Amino acid sequence: MKFLVILHIYYEYMWPELKSYILNLEENSYDIVVTLSKDNEDLRKDILALNPQAKILLVENKGYDVWPFIKALRNVNLDNYKYLIKLHTKRDMPRDRIILIGTKYFFRGSRWRSLLLSFIRLKDNFNKCVECMDKDESIGMVGNKMLLDTIKFKQRFRDPHLKYCIEEAKKMMLKMGIEPIPSDRVYYIGGTMFMCRTSIMKPLLKLDISAEDFKIVERDNENEPAHVLERVFGWLVTSAGFSFADPFTTRNDIINEIPENIHGRIFTFLVRHRYISKCVRFLFRCDKIDGYREIKVFKIKLFKIKCK
Image 1: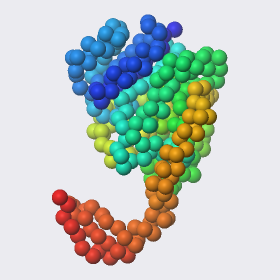
Image 2: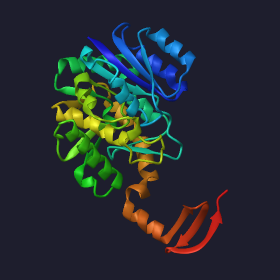
Image 3: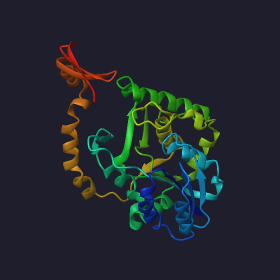
């Protein structure tokens, strides 16, 4: 039975990198659906040169890689595939942005993308994933364990975004007729690149969701259905009685992340410790309001400067 590869290409310059990883699959062992936010004849030709049977879909630039994924699922017969591979073109993180996964691992630059693709970046890694899932029927999804994030229900009251994601994800699960398991937390791959059993994603076809349900892509808008569905993907795994696995990450891989994690903890200290952050903001703050920066000390506005 063939693999189903679903790839969303937004950053077209990243296609050669993704293409090199897809070549780790045996020829004729997979079908591929590629979603594009804008048409590109040269890109189409290169995709078809890789796989002449590739299905190429134009999709609305909404919902990051998640809405294109839903649309792709609706354009194939999932019963024809045992395993599904989800990929997309994830850009480098800006220099001043650090991503925290699972309260433990910190990533910046290209590192997040590199770890997301680690299950398929090396042929040996990919073969280990297939062998692992073939041997153990309880494993539903494989991905880098450093990216396996968890949201516990008790966290939702401290973070409005987490509260939104949990509540909306539960609503989506119930709409699909699935009781969320476990009921007190959600496990998911942060960044939505993985390989899973195709049957796990079939309930998504029951969702009455369209492009209009997603907002235009806006990095500052976190409360968006795409982030909700990121959690739903993980909840579908555990609710179907499956578990997550990582058969390729070694102890040395984790040790090599220690310097970056130490840097991340120091750099994000004030953000992670909100009470300290609130004290600092009480003592001094600089807020951007209507094209001006207001300078406040002890919440008293001293002056404002017009932004350039």
